[in-house]
Structures are given as structure tokens and as C-alpha cells.
Image 1: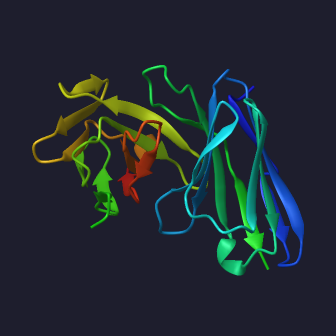
Image 2 (image 1 turned 90 degrees about the vertical axis):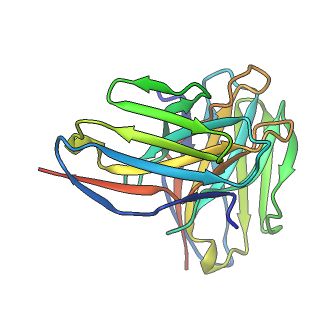
Image 3 (image 1 turned 180 degrees about the vertical axis):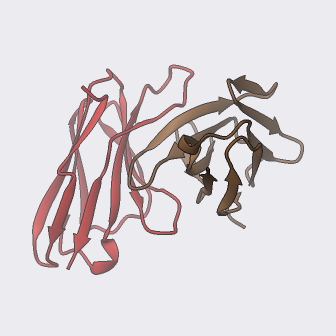
Length: 114
Length: 111
């Protein structure tokens, strides 16, 4: 079983749809992250949760709404997206405060907005 | 200026070659540095952390130069399986783990 699992792996949605991305980590970590990776661009940090509390919102539009019900699960709720939101959305987790900054990534959800 | 800058490449090298990538970062307060590897349409995976004294893992050697604010990755005896994008990553050390990623350097190893 992989450490960080994301579902779905692929998603196609219209601009008026509402969908959610799910991330689950099996590593016992206390911090989880959402990143966006667009073509030819570096990974962009979207949200950070430490101990279920959101500690970073990197100027992300409100059409992206994160939810972290517990330290193992992270959701990204999507609504009224734009075509430019099409990208690979990656979830990561780490053990904050452990002295190690290493983040472990899920396989990502490839999102296409039509 | 970008926070983390890398030459996007691609670097085309034959099998067995030695190749080096450099990366520069702008925040002098950065404390932690990493190289991640990302295969096409896959997630990034940690290749190695970069320590001040430099570190080696098999065919891979990472170096950090704080004075010049650059990080390097050396790959010796390149394999076909080394073909990937190599991401330079810096922790901004703002009190929690905020990693900043470079755009990556693409490596293509040919037979």
C-alpha cells in the first residue's frame, strides 16, 4: 500500500460542476499539503494543514475549498472551475516538528476542466 | 527573480556519461535543500537531501554552497532509467514546512 493515496486519478469536469479530490496518508504524519502542477510551471503550494489546522492559504481562489477532517485525510472541493485550473493536483504529507522536512507525494489527480 | 531557478534543459547524454545540474535560490535564510525526481506524468519522489558538507548516494552526489546560494547534483555513470525531471527544492523555513520547487531540469539518457 502506497503511503499517500489520491482519488480519483483522473477527473474531467465542466465549469458548472462540483467535485472533490480525496487524499489519504498512511504514514502517521501530522501535516498535509495540496499542490498544483501546471504544464511548464513549478509545483505551486496551495494549502497546508498542520494537526488538522490550516496554516497556509497561498492566495488560492475561493473556488478551491480544502477540508481536513483528521490528520490522515485531506479533501479539495472544487466548484465553478475555469479551464486554466486544468492541472495535476498533488497531495503530500510530512511529519512536522520531526526535524525532517521531507514530504511524500501521492500520485496526483489529473484534472481537466472543459 | 524566481525563488528557485534551474536550467530546464533538456540535457541529452549517452549512457555512462557524467552530468551535473545546478540550482540557485534567492532566500539566504533557507535551511533545508532537496533534490526530487519526477518521471513523466508521475508524482515527485525524494532523491536525496542536500547537506552542508555534501552527500553521496551511490552514483549521485549533492553539494550545497551557501555563500553562493546554489545547490548541485552530479550523476555519474548515467543509466537509461535516470531519464526524468530533477526538481531542486528549498525549504523557506518560515516556521513550518514550506517547500519551494524549481521548474525542474529534464534529463534524457540515450543508449
